[in-house]
Image 1: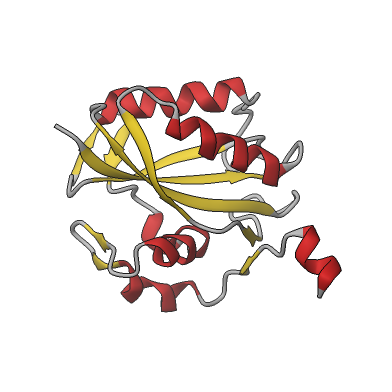
Image 2 (image 1 turned 90 degrees about the vertical axis):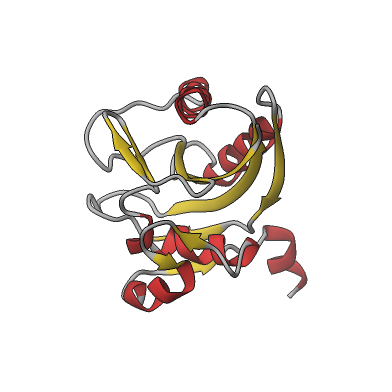
Length: 168
């Protein structure tokens, strides 16, 4: 059985925009999985540990036959291949992949909570999510659009591609 899952992507080291773009392509190559939609890239200020470079973020929707734990393991493997190190909470990273939504799943198990427990608090998740899924619902929390106003103090903006900036 295939399900639509939503993945958050972020990076702030080693050419973060390229890291996110490569990871988006890798999502489409996962077994029994295809990329349905992807957001634009967004720039966001770090949350938690702020003494680090800004992040590049995106959100992708995929259709997958992978079970939630298998999908999470595949995401962690992609992070590892991109050189992700977990030195401390909210540390700078080459790539961060978060399983945000898995269909309408709403549960908590050791190491996996769906929907992602902080997605409704993060503008860098909500803005790109609403770009590709304006009617998105966060199971147990309601419409994603209803949470955006609570992220007003967060600095999130569409990333202007260098070519567009030159032609502007």
